[in-house]
Image (cartoon, rainbow, N blue to C red):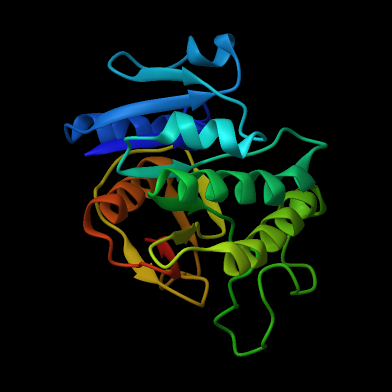
Length: 213
């Protein structure tokens, strides 16, 4: 399978690159600068492209089977996430391929029966992460409006951190997943496993889904 990954030099995108390569896929890492391309793992075909230019990006994605968008704006530019995602999805449509979007947990409902989402629940989020949470919430609704029938949106749990690959995770859809102890977490490595599983198996076409331990 030919998989293009946007944000391939980032923490999450880089782990998705590694997971896809380990499974024998042909991986194209798309980045906006030569400096980012230089960070890509051995075995990745690096391509420089501006995600803001959906037409040019669509040309870059031609011939791929699927594109994974693992884009995350830098601090202070969180509001760019939604428009960047729309541009990536437009490029995927132009290329005639499926788009898999790395989202956030903000839009997921809490399992406590309160009716609140991760974003709306008073005091649930530390103030420091509220800007990216608001951006992820807006991104989700833009995805809902712009998605193609084969596209998917993957939400992490409350905590997504570097760790180890176990190859195991639980699947959910509308609600934030937590374990018996109330912990809602997954390693970036296993989050990458879930995304590449989706690229291979297409179990959530036209759907949002989430994963956690």
